[in-house]
Image (cartoon, rainbow, N blue to C red):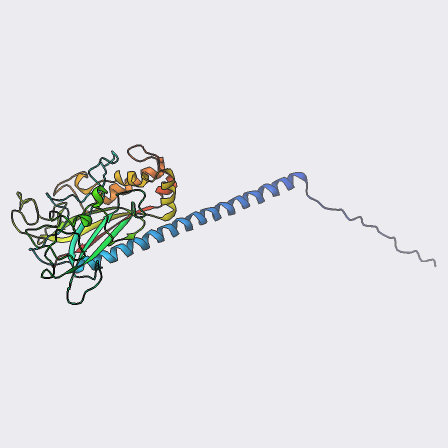
Length: 355
């Protein structure tokens, strides 16, 4: 019997591959995925960068407010001493100006204040045992004197240590000894050495005082107002209905700060990168921007009843958001939108109800 071999079956293996259409679809899908991942990473980077900028301004605002809290907490509780604060008359504490959407006009600007407080200060001429009192003259201002000054458009603080009045009563000389000023003398009216502490211009070197130091390098706008014990907010430290004829805290009635519940402080802070962008446009542009931020006195609803807590800060925020969108201040001056996005507005109330 002849055995036949099994037939050999040859299988031909087909070689698989992608068609051109499949390749194009794959490339398209991969491209979309890459674009999505890139967009997510870009957004995350932008959010992180913005968050870091806000952390920087938040930290600076907290530092400034904490320093102010210490100064206000030790403010003298007396009606026989002067406070260089915003009031109906006798106050020139504004800087070089803003006109609420009209740019600088030469007579308004960031506020300034000076008061006596029981915090350590610097003693011009050095410390002399037995002469220095426990009182200092503390002042805050945004320097608006000269664009060549390193402190220009930055918040400054001064703490001038004072001697006892019996040591030197010649307050009208710019010497190293400064006694406290009692009413009827006022800080604004006594002349030197107090003029450098309360002037914010460069006329006759009145704004030059070696005891000023930069405390808020990012703070370019500084404003304060008052919360009365009856709940009203106002730019005079007394109720206008109770004292309609009052001009200052000591005239005609010596009321001091007895009607105040708190002093409200508002600041605008910009981070260093944003400041550099604006300064590249013009050294004065940051002051122009600040000039378009409403002064409490000139804001809508001025008076006792119309102005509400938070109104001023809302107006400032509106200005900043408008600049971030348009690249122009309300008075029409160009500002880099990215710089405006680094600005934040802060507010704190400092309780004075123990006064």
